[in-house]
Image 1: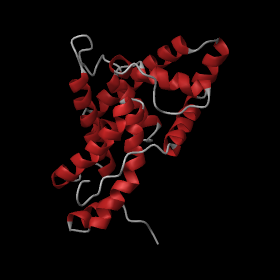
Image 2: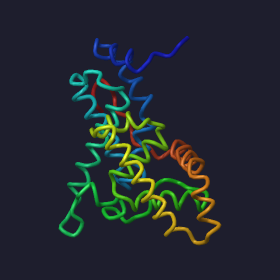
Image 3: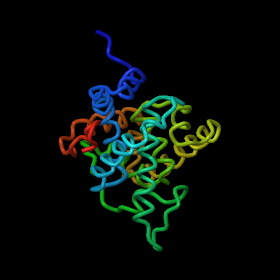
Length: 219
């Protein structure tokens, strides 16, 4: 039996099928959890919950511009920005074009990494401006196209293409600074897609997840 598409589940949910809403959340829970893991530290579980609650509260306003997944990540991105603005101080003023995840949360990433190259990649991502980090993680971990990422982050496609090019440049610079040897640098840069995919897999194996949001009650 063919699994229902997101659009079909969304339509059924809006028509009153609570099981369809729950299935939508279950389908995308891991991805939203992963989205916050390398950016929000110990606050990640709370932001996952807020994202799905935000989805519950605003789903009727979703008009199908783009995919449900892109819209859900847009909700997550807004929650992340709100979280950072709340945490920002005069010493770490929030400007998404310049501030990094490491600036606002200097503790190491909560994502598990078995290899040194993976740890270098995680740390390098946290040292580039958040808007660039988000774009690259959506590209590498969620396999989104440039058009999907642009829609998710609410910018023109041309702007997103330029942003991703710049993000890759900055990531390469940070990886170069973090690598302990030329061999480590070459291994990290030469197998970037592989390390990113393995980090994605490790994130899915983590058992320390918050409780899931009920698509009916919001609890």
